[in-house]
Image (cartoon, rainbow, N blue to C red):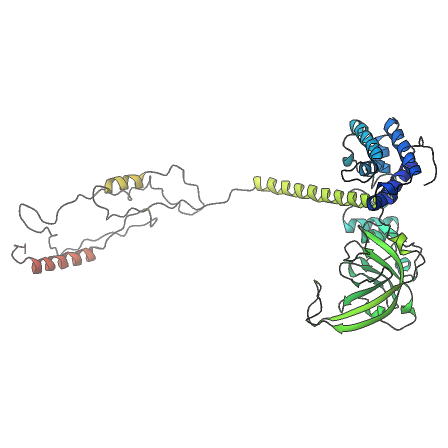
Length: 469
């Protein structure tokens, strides 16, 4: 870092100090310990921290724009290996800034505003893929043209370039829109770029070689295996943070440079081969070998994403999560509002209890009285053509208690039987409104048959009793 007076606390100076502490010094101190820092750097950092603590010109916007407060938090962390004197200086800065600006860990970087990573690219409410593409087609259609992404070579990009998502890499013009899902940027002539996602990188013994594995459903795989002169040109390789590789970025999408195809093999998966999430036994697999051919050293490429880039990625994910939760709350509120104003569901009338007329004994009057009491809740109005009567209004459903009488009278010692009659009573048909509200009617024919059978049985059992003829 160049020698600059400690009193210079401009935004560019603060941003450079934060980058120096977080990307260079903090990594080496965590690995080697506090003895690694040269004494000159310790004195320089002490002067900078003293100036930060005593400055009254630094504002809240300066902290958010430069990220210097995050560098101070890392030096004064709980598991820090920084020298104790520098950690004490940072503790004083944290106490001073917390009293002025609030909690420092709640100060998020600018993403969409002036100086943010997504300035002129997107707005805070442009979170859908369709909305972003529509905006870009209106504002910068030349960046989305295929003639920019379908170009061999680096196409003006430097190895180590970094983006938040594959969609923003498409906006930059290094890949086309289909590559964000398929992973291969190609046309009928050759392949221009590939995006390594998930398990696409099968083997990577070094940082300059890897094996790209794909199945027969991957579009553009034939162009990688073609033997034409155009297909042997350099290919831009991008790695996503979702890749299962030690060479992938910690967050976002990174351009790793130019690679060339050095060989390929086609085989069928066997039972002993490890399977991916989308593979099964018998699938045809393409293993394509790549060799790096780029002047930028891989060590410089691996330094991305920087600490500031990781902060931007974290803020981007936080805003998207906040937007999803807010959308879900609005949708839930609308659903509850709709349910509140919805008409009440129609219900059938309550099932009325049925009292059997054969109940006799001293419990019969009590049970009948309980059954005839009206329900505490009023019956709901229905849309039936003939509404059902309630128990309270139904006169035909009242049942009187049957007096218990012994079958044999003690005075006459005769069995009381119904007298014989040749006249059969005519019962008028009753219009029944409900099977539950009316008592059960016994057929007179069945009563006569039961009486005659009872009399014949008693003659056989007690022949000495005088019976009425």
